[in-house]
Length: 138
Image (cartoon, rainbow, N blue to C red; front, top):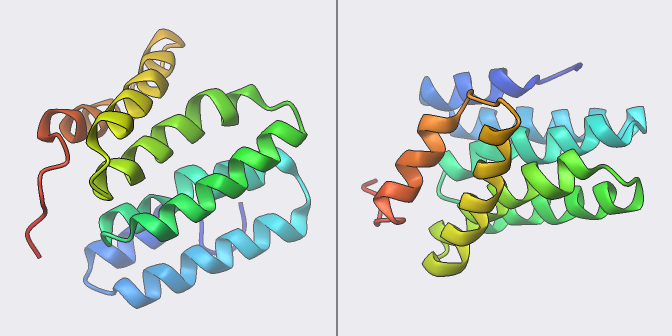
């Protein structure tokens, strides 16, 4: 993927540059839209939007996930709609305080991920589920 790949934006966030992380994330999404490749766009809007989880901005996270869901459905991309969307939607719902719905949604996506052999990010998802969306410390 081109400008602002998925890991770059998280690196900026971890280094203490949240505004740059958002700028990179937005550039990544714009690049993916210009490519007009539905899977790349769905991936960018879900896996690439986790920076908004780190920034405690669930509405921004959810906005991107909703676009990914639309793109996935329009193009019959079950990996996007059945796995990435539920995981990311669940995370955003939990941080919005909608714990029961968010946890059920995240757990459903995470179970599909693990059943398909996925292991990357599983500890992160489990930590969110274990914390039940406890309020974050700034």
